[in-house]
Length: 323
Ligand SMILES: [Fe+2]
Image 1 (cartoon, rainbow, N blue to C red):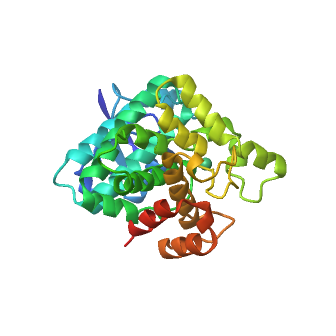
Image 2: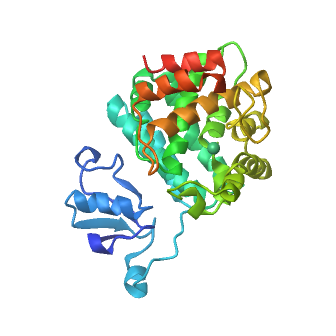
């Protein structure tokens, strides 16, 4: 049932139907489930005072009135919705590359947030469906790929970082891996997007700590590649090669990485690709404890001070993405 409510009544979990075309509001889709208060704020900032919700597809208005408190959130459909919206945007020929890139990033982040809440095997399978659309887009649409690469400099959170690294690493794999060789780019994409999934097992206070981590906290953080690898192994949704991305994305060419301190060719090519993308995104993103670098300065710092961290060919191809 469609019901009109005041914007103040809107809560995460409700499925909204925006009154106007997507080009006239800040969202790429007219219909979707609200997953965060940030989205509601965006609507308020846009001057929307009243909104239609579909009570069959999302949380009804009555439950808000009755409870007067934060509802128990059920995000089970959000992942599917975001994955479907992604597909719609990607196949809509009318959308210009810059707008498509922004929308793909936004919905990928929504999808990531939703998965993070409950990363079960079934949900990882749904997530992979969304990633397939993004991978195909990057492989087939150079104009949008180029726009996506320009979007990487952004505020930091784990979800945005995961999506940025996913986009960067797929873009790098596209130019680096020989077409004749057998690489399952869809499976690879899932591994790149989920490289930090092990962080779901770590206390959020540590993940979001603005200052320096204690030795104990750092030890725990260094376990996230192994924890992610194990989690994905248990859910049986990701191939071994893609799980290696998760396990090895903090290994470094000179042997100084973790968890195993692998060197050079002992690090799988997929892990080497992910590590370059991961470091680059960490440098270009804004964090409380460090300055944000431009892509140019990030690449310069990687070349001048970190070159032995990366495989030569992988790094050189990565730099070319930004020419
Ligand atoms: Fe990581």
